[in-house]
Length: 203
Ligand code: 5GP
Image (cartoon, rainbow, N blue to C red; front, side):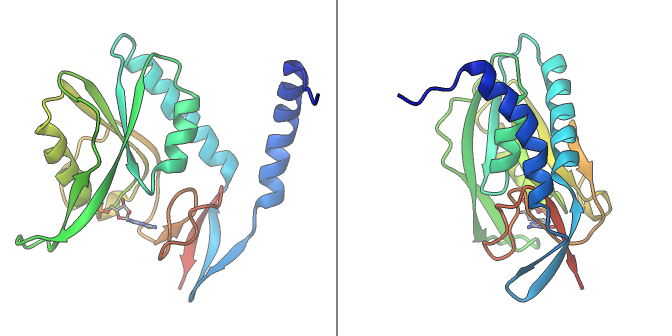
């Protein structure tokens, strides 16, 4: 029977992981009609994600938070963040379905797929990126209808210069310029979510 001792496995993980990321970094990638250049490497992302997790671990001791991950974009951030969470917690997933709203903002996104009871809970929304902040604003309104005790936001990325609404975002892994990015869960027309690094579009 094939068998790896736990200590061997751990030693391999420590040695191989940084090398793996280094080998995988590509300076530029092509997705459909657009070229992208690497802007945040995996090591930096991992360090910032661990930092955010440690802040959450300290802030939410005794709160048994429910992490609410917003698919699809937040899937990688969620997986990596949760590996560093050491306090008791639950995780659940929702999606945002777009529909044409009647308000001046045009497209409104409705939260679907919630199967957790948020009543009286400390909820931490895990989002990939806050750009104008309109999506997050709608999400906060939808979540408030479920009577949570408290709602906090953990966003992998924030474009501070694009924000159109006032938002209290407690945890931000990285702030970035206004450019369009892909990788680490974020896509361009469905592609590019698989990269461990983040890439910025080249005009
Ligand atoms: P907001 O409502 O804050 O303007 O937009 C939030 C959503 O827009 C994100 O959840 C994400 O799906 C998308 N988005 C905003 N900026 C970017 C970006 O630079 N790259 C990608 N791939 N998606 C983005």
